Image 1 (spheres, rainbow, N blue to C red):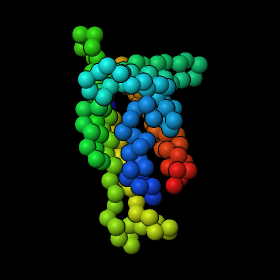
Image 2 (image 1 turned 90 degrees about the vertical axis):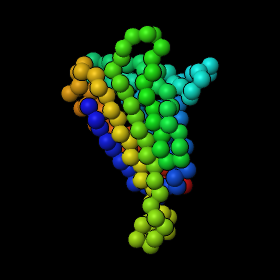
Image 3 (image 1 turned 180 degrees about the vertical axis):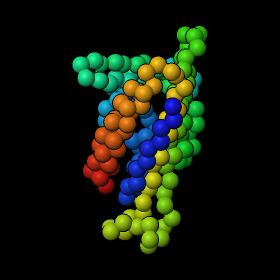
Length: 155
């Protein structure tokens, strides 16, 4: 399963990065991420993440250990890396943040340049993929709205 979502905002690249480069910030704007706690003693930046969603009267949760494997300005990658010795489905979240060229055509009404956020999620598991995809899409739409509100409030 591969899902891509995007957001364009007048917020700066730095303002957007503040909300997407540390998984501990995700619960503020992405309800699917119930918790994300930084693992203090890990060699690489690592988070214990709990995803939680409700489908009708049923609630499901999934725990993942995610490592930030790429951390460049404007490109961040989080990948699942469990330490229990078992084989697990791949989860990879690729985050790209770019600023539009500083031209009159790329400015909003307030004169601010546009910043584009693209998030790509790759999951190669087979368990309830159709249900997972539906839940993700609902949470992506709500998360996009909440992140936009947070970015507007911090401007």
